[in-house]
Length: 169
Figure (tube, one colour):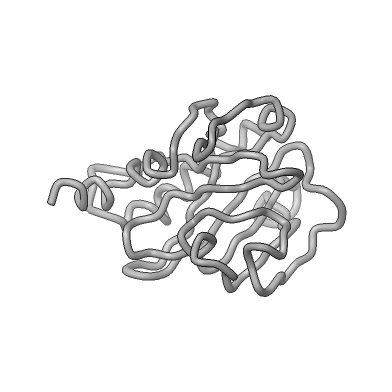
């Protein structure tokens, strides 16, 4: 599964993140994760003014495009969810679940969001390893990436060139 993480992340960077600002190539960004009780809380990088419109949990598959959607939802319920911080497989973050997850999330999976606002984009998270995620102790406001880095919400957003440009103004 981890082998596909790089391919999936690279494809998302090219299709979703390069529209944030003109750069010399794809922007490799990572999402952050933390446990919130029994739920996974995701922090996706967003450009200032953009919003999450929908989210998907997927796993590797030998069928179709190589991925199987396990859960999907749209219409964020809260400002926090629209701002890129949301719970996976929880009614707390999205109004409409378009595909129910049967049971708990698998041990490893990917999260993808569709974003709108100044631009339309799709952003991948990198993979989530629940065993590793559950073993990490984080302070309030901290998230861990699939690379094992601990980042704040501001640091996750700061990865995007559009937000770096906003900071320089």
